[in-house]
Image 1 (cartoon, rainbow, N blue to C red):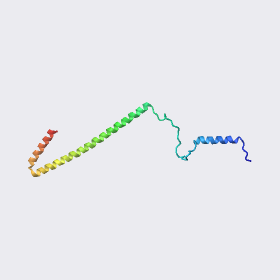
Image 2: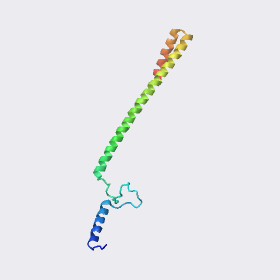
Image 3: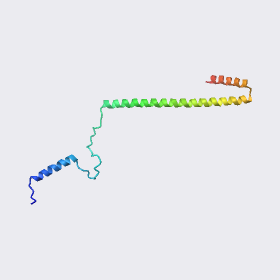
Image 4: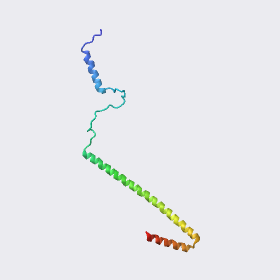
Length: 124
């Protein structure tokens, strides 16, 4: 009694095609967890000239600000380094004068200090 009527076959065919249209087909390799691929559209990612120019201006402003910040940081670093060098130089000079004071008279050491200071100012 498995006699099929000709009207039942088209019903099955139409339901199976609608299921495939919704699923977009299963992947052949079985990696169904990957996102389905879409058609390649070369013009889809293009932006207008005005928008590109606006983005370029923003990028340039950001770069200028970053450069300014880098320069400020470098100046601060150089200032600290120079302060350390000045302190070390002053300490060495003080130690040198103390060493001279051990051997010489105090007034003579002071006179030499003033003389070196004058010469230093003349050189610079």
